[in-house]
Structures are given as structure tokens and as C-alpha cells.
Image 1: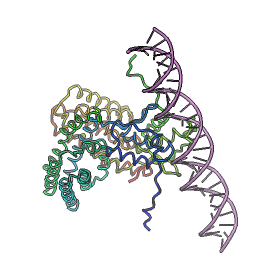
Image 2: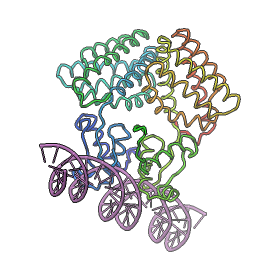
Image 3: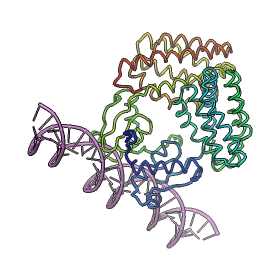
Image 4: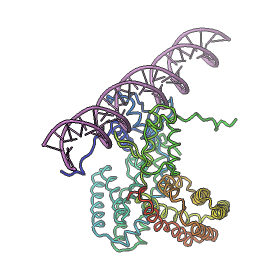
Length: 225
Length: 225
DNA sequence: TATACCATACTTCCATACCAGTGAAGAGAA
DNA sequence: TTCTCTTCACTGGTATGGAAGTATGGTATA
């Protein structure tokens, strides 16, 4: 038996937290919605305490807001936070692209090509969820190719609000543009052209600058400045 | 009376969390130390529940690790996390420097000059705390000058482990080198030379690449890979 | 001496009860 | 009708007791 596989059952509180977090990320629990310790506890069939602790964790994630004696609400999406995360992504992924272009890790680049193929298929099928997941994997592979896997973990946390926006808009931004940029990035990486890889990456991420305000304007109830 | 100043007393749990967080950041509670719900509650004179919730928040910050039925421990500093945050800082602050060099916001640049003066003084006086605080303000001003204040808030959260390392090492890295780079950065910003500003910033942050492993090696008990 | 077992004193986790603050509905007066 | 006040259901916050799991040191056994 593989001793690394020995795990303990996660606490009730942690399970509730995971469940809520996924539902918020997927837009199942919409921004501004009120949630109640009592209701959730009764629905699951447990006491209030673990639910309460899950709410605290959710608030630490920036996904909920606990207002004492008033109620707990799913956080609205802060446009400023999304744009801040976008700025950070552009800077970081530009550097990552340069590093990968210089290192040219063939195995990683091949996997990136496969993801682009999956994105074509998801686009044809109109499967937004698959597209988003493959998109994320593409960018994660970039970090991996630069030997900076931990960097992606940090970016992923920053991306939390951005992910909610993507799911809510159900548009995943301009998909054909995204795929085209991914291809350009990959071509540049294969050719070892750091400058081209960087500029293609920056162009990809700057596209959000025009799309985010449009999405926010279309569903103003879900957003704050 | 300024109605904006009306605030409600923070919950006990939140106060305990703030208190613990500061003590961990300042190295008062060293990495690896065991803390107990019962002990902290008894020391403060409250029940265990708020303390428990403070521990949960602390764990969300990455500053503590709760091991069920075993105990709660102050997190050791992950060298990988520090280096990941450093990589992100370099990429982001390089872009910020370029933006500021192009915008040349005079008022901000003057404030940055004052911070450099404070750093000279703190260095002469051997006041490490003052030096660290001024150092942070210098970099925050950079984000401000680029119109990206929210970016600094995100970076600040990523810097959590880095800050602990700084306080623990009580060295604040190479102070004279830091001040010199700050001056070079400021000169480049004043001259509108984006390339020079970027390279000076990158050189400053790359200095950590050599210092972090040294500090970690000097106090191995406080660090993990 | 070395090993297996077990009592015990911890730990965090969960359930329950009660508290204080909030806000909206409803009664009553102008 | 409109306004004010009271009431009350409901919210999150805290205290406490006990359940389940873990580590440790002593003890019996080989």
C-alpha cells in the first residue's frame, strides 16, 4: 500500500467550506445573495457551528461578507479587484513567457499544443466549462515550463473574482481571439522568440480591459466599483 | 462628528485574530511553535470558541496550521512561497516602474525622495523597523504613481511570508544596496527612462535570490523547502 | 532488555444554549 | 392617511459540555 495515500477525513467545517466555495465560483450562489447559518445547517442536517466556521473561511477567501447581527451575503464582484488581478497576471505571465521561450521545455510545449486542440473542440461544441478549464491548464503549463509552479498557485488565488466573472458572463471572453493568441504564444515559445511570446501574452490579457467593463455594465447588480 | 468614523466594536474573534497575526508577522510567535485554544483563551480570559475561530482565520492567512486532534502550530516559512512572491514582485514592480516613468507624477516622486531620506536616517540609526516600514512605503508609492493602488494591496498579502523572514533575519537585507537601488530607480523615473527604471528595480529584487537561501540556511528550524 | 499493551491527559471538533443587536411588521395616535 | 412606537422573529457572537482522535508514559509480558 502506498503510505502517501493515507488521508484523514476532512472536518465537516472544511467540507461545507469546499462545497460553498465551488458553488460561489460557479455562480450558483449569485453575488449579493443572503445565506444563513441556520438554513444551511438545517439543509445539511448538522449544527450551526461548522457552518459558521465555513462562512468565516469563505469570508477570508473574499467570497462572502459577514455583517454581525444582520446576515451573511455572497460578495459582489469588485471590478477594481478584477482589474488589479489582470494587471498582475499580465506582468507575471509576460515574464513567465520570456522564461519559457528561453528554456524551450519540449514536453511542456507539446502539452500546451494539446490544450489548444481541446479549446478548438470546446469552442465548436459550445462547451464553455471545458473551454475555461483548458484555458486555465494552458496558463498553468506556462508556469510549469518556467519552473515556477508555486507562482501559478498564487495567481490562482488572485484570480478568484475573475473566475466568478467568467462563469457569470458565460462568455469566457472572446474565445476565437483567445485561441488565436494561445497559438501565437506557442509558436513564439517554440521558436525561442521571447519578445514575440511576451507581446502575444500581453495582447491576450489586455483584451480583458475592454470586456470586463462591458460585462459589469450588463449585470450591474452583481458588481461593485 | 464625522459619520464616517462611526464604527462598531470588532468581534472578540476578530480582535484575537489581529493580535495573533501581528505577533506572528513580527516573529514574536516563532515558526513551528505550538499554540492551544485552551491556553490562549485562558490567557485572555474568554471562552475557547472565539479563539478557535481566530485560529481558523490565521490558517486561512497561511500563518498557522491546524492539525485535528493534535494541535495548532505556527507555520514554518516556505522558501518556495517566498521565492514565488519574489518572482511575482519582480514582474509586477517592473511594469509599475515603467508606467510611473511614463507618467512622471511629480508629487509622488517627491514623496519617494523623502522616503529615501528616511531610509538613510534609519540605516545610520540602525533602526531596522523604521527601515522596513519606509521601504514598504517606497514601493507602495510606486503602485500609487502608476494608478494601481489595489495592486499593492494584493502584493502585500503575497508578501506575508517575506515579511516574517525580514523580521526574523533582523537584517532587512542589504540596506545600503537597497538604498542605492531606490535612488537609481527614482533618478530613472524622474528622467522618464523606463528601461533604466525597470532594470534597477529588477536588480533590487533579484538581490533576494542570494540572500533568502542564506537566511534560511542560518535558521533551518524556521523554514521548510 | 525489548516489546506490546493500556490508562491517561491532552488536542481539536461539534452540538447546544443563551446573549445582544437588527429590522420589519403591526398597533395606535395624530 | 401618515407618522411614531412597540413588539418580535431572526441574525450572528459567545460560552460550555462532551465526543472523537492522538501522543505519551507506565506496566506487564516475553
